[in-house]
Amino acid sequence: MAEKHLRRRAVEEVTGLGRSTIYDLMSKGQFPRPIKLTGKAVAWPESAVSDWLENRPTA
Image (cartoon, rainbow, N blue to C red; front, side, top):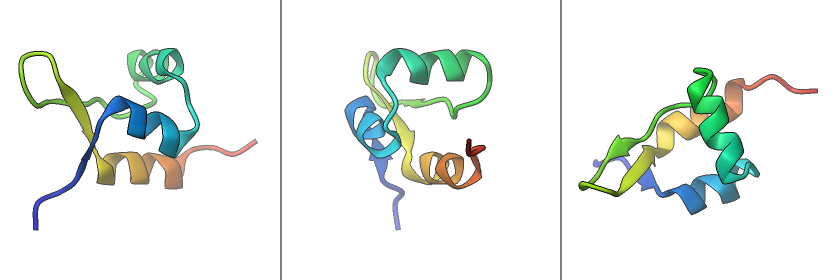
């Protein structure tokens, strides 16, 4: 079965993070990087986002 991929807005909804926070965490190596779908479009593998949510530190 093919893995589902989430576009940025879906990632924002699932994680509760904003665009700039997602990209800031990615630059620090603390959030998964997306894959390219086309020349401009990217998406995150749903499994990578789910794993990040399960393993992120809680306050």
